[in-house]
Structures are given as structure tokens and as C-alpha cells.
Length: 472
Image (cartoon, rainbow, N blue to C red; front, side):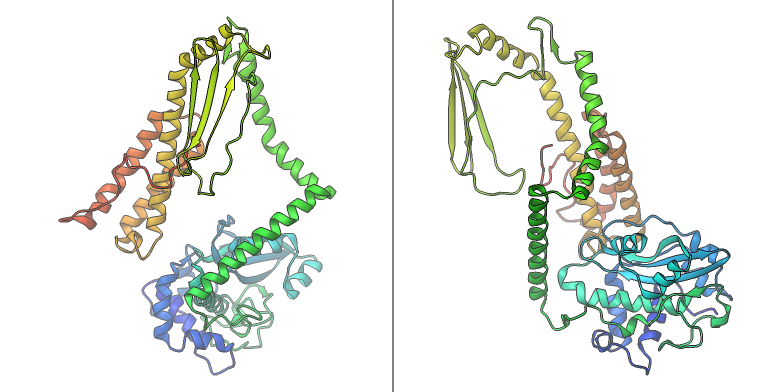
């Protein structure tokens, strides 16, 4: 059955309203949020929802798709997105289909699919099918979008479930074919679907958030609720971790050890390789750079809490003619200072050894400078790509002011830069990072400059560091 729609967004909008505009009972929440088709159409673009490739052609086809179409969809589920997913179960030559949604605050739709894979939370018909020998052979996303702000959660979550109902109407993953489940007529006769369904109700008849009526809450109240919930999760997680460390269960320790083994071999191998090659070894002193001599220690306390990268600690080393070393440190923000004087009264180092160490520090100054420049260049590229991506994803900012083609071009350039960082960050030089940053800027500047023709402003210059610059 072909619908009169130019694209998939318009088509799904039309089918969603068909599901909402029925005489049967549905949860009153949906009619409160979407009393007319205009209300639904106004919210739809704000979702920024993406549908899987090929969906438009499938829905416009004369017959229902074959199960192979679902199996061809990507199995990779991104982190931290909301979405509508499909599960394919198989036993021999028979297939069963389940369609659901995930709008979790922590990990979105991915956590919902992991629950299916681990069988921790399953709908009754899905559980029964697996108990009867059906295997979950594939899972994929039919639609997805970025999580909204706390103020947008109620309306956006309601919209996602309404779109889920539209996808139910299209693919009929319902347990019975003879029951309407409060749906209008779909694109094909129900007997034509080459699979059985596992869904036992229409998504529009269920609650969106059980026990919580948040439709009438103000944006400020919703933001406050979100911050309280986040703080509660943090406290619970930290309390649980402390209890586990105090009296660890075998499962907890096994998980910690598994994580340590996953990363430790590489670090240990690299450490021993550097030691064996004597890459940082002084032949005159016969001392390896990793062999440190503790001269003394002092604590600079009383620094007020601040975001990472903001506190500025100034450390000064003074060596007088008698070989006495004085070290002082001060916090520029609070004015707190502490100091320590290192002498040779404990037989730790002679004056000559102290002087030699100072000379070594000067000797390696160029190497330290190169390392610092490399870190700054890497941070510059990472922050520039991250800032640009956030602006492009902001529909009220840059993302909503440029053409879709230009937006896609910029997002692809950002992805290339981030992929390059993932593959080359460990070995790249400062010049390599600067080259990649300039390459990204060459793509971004011509597009963003269109917004500021004839006026001041524009994207930051390549040499400008974002305000959130951090040192590695």
C-alpha cells in the first residue's frame, strides 16, 4: 500500500496520528500532549529523530517485507540514545518479532536491549518464546534520537511511544492477528506478515511513567527533579562501592580483576620495554628516570572546590649556593601557600647530586616542552571537534541555522577527526594534531562564515582555546 508522503518523516508523522486519532480507549496522556495533529507536527521536528535506512521504501511497497530485511539492519546499538528497537527470534525456519522502545535516563535504548540479551527483564511472550527454544538472533534500531533535556523529557518520551505505535501498525509484531488492539488499518493485510508477533498490547494503552504524573510540571520543576535523581544515583553508587570494598563479594572482585587484566598487560609491557631499552637512563649517574629520590613532601590544603582545569597552582624551586633547596607552592585563587626546605642533614643527597639533578632537569627541558606542546595540540583538536559537534547538535543554535547538507558535511568532518584521534593519538606529534585541527577548520570555516557575512562574529579562530581547556 503506497501512502501519499514525500519522505519518511512525513509518512511516520501521518501514521502516528492515525494511531492517536482512534475512537478506542488509549492512555489519556497521549491526547493531553497531542490533542490535535498540529500539536504532533509541531513537536515532531524537535525530536531530531532518525529512521533506519530503507524504511520508506519498505512501507511504500505493495507487500510486507521479508524477514531478511530486518536481519540486514545494523546490529550496532549506540550509547546514550533514545530509540525504538526490533528483536528477531528464530527456531528452525519460524521467526517471531518484537518491537519496543527505550528512553532510559542513564543509557537509553541500549540498556533495554542488554536486558533482553541478559534475560533480566523480558515481556511475557518473549520469555515464553525463549523458554520454548527460540533464540534471539538479531536486534537493531528502527528509529533513534538524542536524549532531550529534563524539561523536554515528558513530551519527548510520549512522542517516542506514539511513534512506536506507528511502527507496530506497520510491521504488526502483535501476538494475535485477529485482534485489532485499538489500531487502525495498516499498510498490508495481517495474514500477509511472514512472522509471528510477541507484543501483547498497543503501546498507547500503557503508562509512560508509572506512578508519576509529570505533564503539568514546569520546566524548572522537571530540571530540579532530574538533578535530584542524578544526585541520588551518585550517592547510591558511591555507597554501594564503599560497601563492596569494605566487604567485597566474589563477583565484585572478579569484575575488578577482569577490568585490571584487560588494561594491565599493555601498560606493564610498555613499562618494561622502556626500562629495558634504557630510553630514560643516565649513564653517568647510572640512574633510570623512573628511580625517584624522595626529598620531602608537604600538603597544600584548603583549596576551594572548582571544575577540573580551573585551579592554578604556582610552584617555585630555589637552590642556594649551599645546596639548600626550598620548594614553595601557592594557589592563585585562594592565596593559600605552603613551603618546604630540603637540606642534606639526613644524608639523602650531596650538594653535587642535587646540582646534577637540577642540570638534568635543564637538559630535558626541551623534551618536556615538546611533550607539553603535544598535549596542548591534542587537547586543542579534541576540544575543537567536541565543541563543533555540540553546536551542530543544538537545533536552537548552529545546528538549526545551516543547511542540512552543510550540517552533514561538518558532522562527517568531525567524525573523521575523532576517528583519527582514536587511532593515532598515542603516536601522533604536535604537528600532526595541528594539521588535523587545521583540516577540520578548513571544512568548518567556509560553512559557518555564511552566517556572519556582513557582520562581526563567527566561529572561534583555530588558535583560540575553548574555555573548558584541560591539561592531560
